Length: 121
Image 1 (cartoon, rainbow, N blue to C red):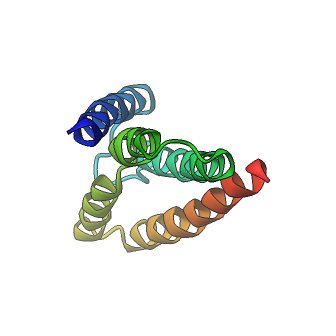
Image 2: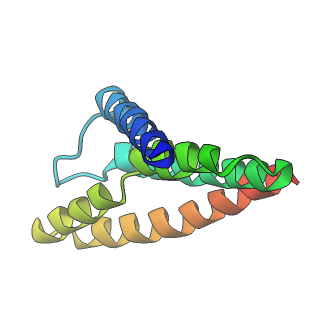
């Protein structure tokens, strides 16, 4: 039950942080590159690399992993929003933007996750 509470609280915090980012950076309209979601995903990828590296390096209690990775970062990153925004771009005949969005999000996200892990070594 304790693990569930950690994930629940972290998820609420992460989702709130994502909402704040969308207010600051703007929401996607399905016609332009979804900058807010892209930035959130890249920051989330970097943070998950940092957090995973720290948790592994310092052998932290698994509850903190649930709070930080599953909860906060799971709530903060926006892969479901990413999928929807891709479909909206595609439906609006923004094929080039849609493909660039997929490529940038995946390749830059993976690179930043690796960079986050590298920063801890």
